[in-house]
Image 1 (cartoon, one colour):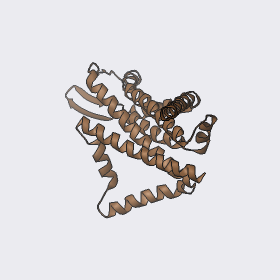
Image 2 (cartoon, one colour):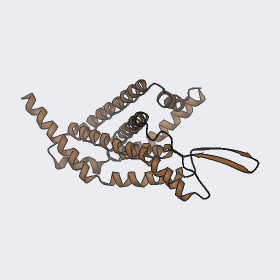
Image 3 (spheres, helix red, strand yellow):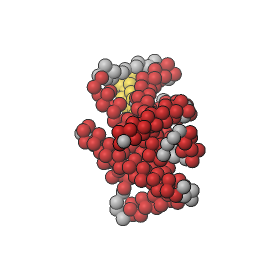
Image 4 (cartoon, one colour):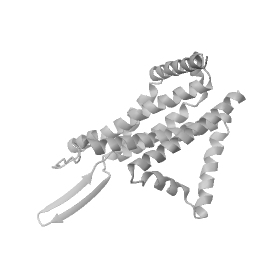
Length: 249
């Protein structure tokens, strides 16, 4: 009997994932739009240096996908937040379902789109270099570094995905908390910002420690462990809030 229940649950989750993949095409449209915006903002370059001697000047501008990645992280957070709204949650009940299968299918869907978002964000660096080469005035020489190095690129892809997925878990948790009471849309940001200000005045800069804890980790394995652990905790908390929401409803 336990085996039968598990099979049924997995089948429902798979059907819901398939439904969301076809129905929520808007998330891909928003991804394209926000990454194009990131590309446009990146045309100024992420860094530059220059030197000059008699008769010539040398200016070097670095173009990376950092801004596009930042925009993609924001997209992951916002998309996860929106998927917790009542309109999206009620779509799940077109199937024989419960809060557990709904949440699992949403997390799986977020996992899939975060992979796509991270991949396209990194690939945008090549598009950015081409745009810079053809659009910028003057005689420009395009130098690409590390194009043939698959290993570092894969590590960068994994790191980008983990960060986007981490922020999607934060967005999902925030969205679930807000669903408990609509007033929390206003109260939650005020409380978070207020606590950050109080902690800052007391000498504890939580945002600095947060970014140092994740983004300044040089060991790839530790970085992976940290982000996966934090993501799991945030999604687990979201599930607990979701269960509370189901009882309330």
